Amino acid sequence: MEIKDYFKQDAILDISFFNFSNAITAAYFASIDLEVLRVNNNFKSFFPVLGNVTKVLFPSVLEQLGVPDAQIDEFQSGLNTNGRVLIPRIELTIAGEEKVYSLLSAVTQNADFSFLNGVQGQFVDRTAENKLRAEKEGLLDQKLRDQEIIEEKSMRLENIANRLAKYLSPQVYKSIFTSGEVETTSHKRKNLTVFFSDIVNFTDLSDTLEPEKLAQIINNYLSEMTTIALECGGTIDKFIGDAIMVFFGDPESLGEEQDALNCIEMALRMRARVNELREYWIRSGVKGGLDIRVGIATGFCTVGNFGSSQRMDYTALGGPVNLSARLEGKAPKNEILISDDTLNLVKGKVDTEYFDEITPKGFSRSIRVHLVKDFSSKQHKENRRTYSHRGKHIDMDVFDASDIRAALEELKTVSTKFEELLSKEDIEKQ
Image (tube, rainbow, N blue to C red):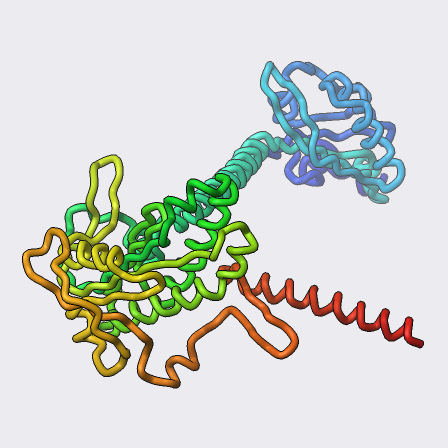
């Protein structure tokens, strides 16, 4: 009598296959030929449609469940080749419900208990896990879509902000986007230095030039003047056709004296830049080039946002604004007029010349007016930025100073062409 005859086979089977009867999976045991010998209770509850599967070949059981042929072939070849197989995902429809299972099976061999020899396996219900994974993947997909939407909207906002920056002075732009809101009710009384300029005989110029040519020249002029204004720290209030209004002292101030000095430095640099661009404008069709007039006045103004609920304008109101506009109208061609109050702030640092005593329209008292020559300091004048070069062999004017790097790249290209031309001439001489 063999040792196996002393044991109850059913009990051994239950113990051998991980407590077969109470397993939470749908467990089965089949002969080496894949004939089902027994299944546990869960197998019957997992697949009630099957009924009794004892003595049925397990591949036929799989076929009845609706397992695809490719996975049935995978099951059989895995057992034959490796003695074990794992199919991680089998999708089935059980009682009208979509279910997902994993199938694990292995060939069992035991020299002492021949009745343990065969194939044992189990279906693991992965439906809940699959749903959680699907939900997680759905959330991740939604997160990616949301991220794409956020990035797209951020790009649109950045594009809008960049476009908006062209319509606002940098100081105003910064105050809006830093605070996150626009204050429409707060107005301040500030001591400002206000600048007005316009182009002499602009009406005649606009009547004689083609619209495209006029736009090209005026945009170039305003672009160059804007670059200088921003470099000097001015707040560009507005463009009125060819006229420019800039003020110093709000929203940022370096002190009343320095604000006035910066305003005069801006005006001098603008005048010098107009002279540098004169030849370019003549070549563009403007007879004699452009000439400007400048008026500067200092005094207390009310500054803040003015307008309606539909459109606001950050600007300054008050006598100095009107006075600077009147002085600009009185200024000779390519000259800068300043008021007495401005002179008092810059006296000793700027050379001026008495011009006249006038009573501007809208003012009840006369005002002494002065012509600006230049800064007194020689070092200050030598350090002033210029965009033209007059040398022994070449004259050069940069007519678009808004992108100096592009101008330098263009100069490099020209230099390379001259080098190539020189090399060609040397070769021909040889």
